[in-house]
Length: 343
Length: 242
Image (cartoon, rainbow over all chains, first blue to last red; front, side, top):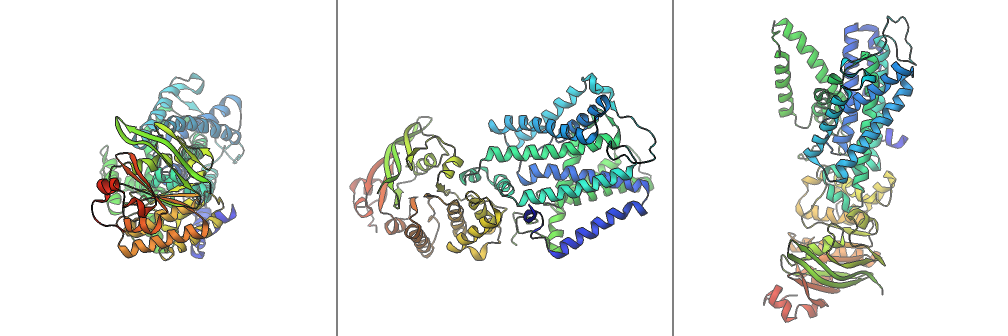
């Protein structure tokens, strides 16, 4: 465990991680409330992006329906809290189990019957859409008119029931993001991590080396789903309202995967870098367009889209791999080393 | 010496095309056995059945006393059969070391120890200097060696080599022949190879099976097989070989 987690990180890598963590820990002392909410959003996307990256970046299975697991996690924990008074930390257990079971069903259907590539991606969209439409009719969970968590003005932070000020969520999401980084590093460097990458590169060749491809892909789907559902729990308790139309919508799934794509699919730090860049860029764009009085509807989306295109064209492997190489942080095990380049 | 691999009456059809018909042979523990024949003779189909990529329509494959026909490739590999692919299939984005590591992890789940094993095999195949290179940047001869290294890393009892000499220069062929012969001698590894390069077949194989249109037309010692009139007519031509 320890070996997988910390071995091979160079000294300056630790230093950078320590400085970044220290800055983020201290940030609430000197930044305003607005920036705190932006940073919470960044941590959320960084975390969810890391969870998605396990499936796509490590094991090569494209999910376009990860909003499913966010939604299941959110509804599981919120439903238990609203109806039965069960706290979110216990609700998190339920969220993980429910998402895990759904992931097993999806994975089994796909992998047992040889559904791969784009067809697998379509299946993930289908599951998320089923959930979106299905939850619209579950009266117990508020159906299409939404599920609301009780809100009041909080003077203190109740960590046990996740009722409190944004700064509490700030620290929770920061910890979650860092824990996910640790988990992903251990997974990537484990036997399973090697097997995932082998499957990602060439499934048949992987199988010929004795790898149980079905089982490894199932692990990827279930671990990724379970981690994503935890993001859903925090989503529910941070926003305090859930609507199927929003939570399960495909645009939510796309939001999750943009971070890793821009940051660097399959890398450890990429999803985090991507979340920072995209969220700051998106928020900055809103400000900038207001300065230039470009407030016509859709203007932001158009500029955002153009900017994404530029990044993908200039850095097809994401922002992080070239930075990692420049900083001497590219790991030997594939981290930051794109296919078509000589080292 | 007992048979490590026994093939009895093996057949495979692809929609009426009889790719392999009623082929039988056995391979003794510690032997180097070659399968030759013209293109389309069914050699790779035969390999794919042994390695589990195809289930045969008929016949049995007994490996180390156990019937393995129809088992999936990973189960076949775990029982001790390693294979290479005719068209090499390294994991392109992984380093040379990591490619071999994936194979080594089968018998050695601990990553540190698997890495040690991977290093040993890379040294054995002369790829150690290139261990940090990305597999997709290797030259063809190196990729072929990587393919062998990766299969060897699974610690097989039987190694199936599908044209690992094709595309190599004569000197490179000799190097590969030496490596395989050493492996066979030192570790007693049983090898079945499909090969067009007769130079390698003559140097390595104790016995040869000749396939033509999916059928076995000759079997025996290489020197005798190359003089067989049916083999000369269907495969070798009138050119003097060996």
